[in-house]
Image (cartoon, rainbow, N blue to C red; front, top):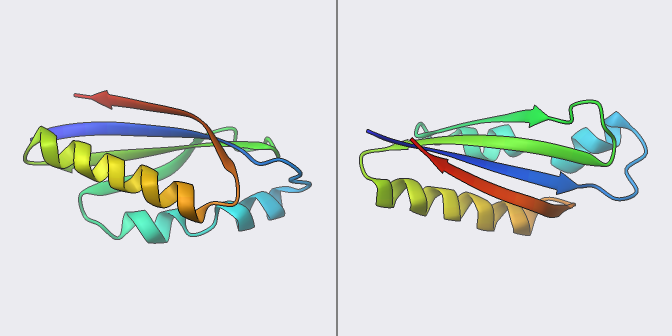
Length: 93
């Protein structure tokens, strides 16, 4: 079993309320949590309006599959989230 942790730090310029932040980040659980190989959560900056950090834990039978899923998630997030990705980190266990 291979495990990868993908962390994405977002900038949400102009965000004026937590409600707006949730709307801009909505769907992360639904989109990526459907895959039984992926667990997703907001891991930092819960109460900060203009930033958010999300972590994705990916489990697969090979390190190549973990890397592929992490890349796929990162690409989809860049296209679908109303914000800018400031930092990406990957850790493999």
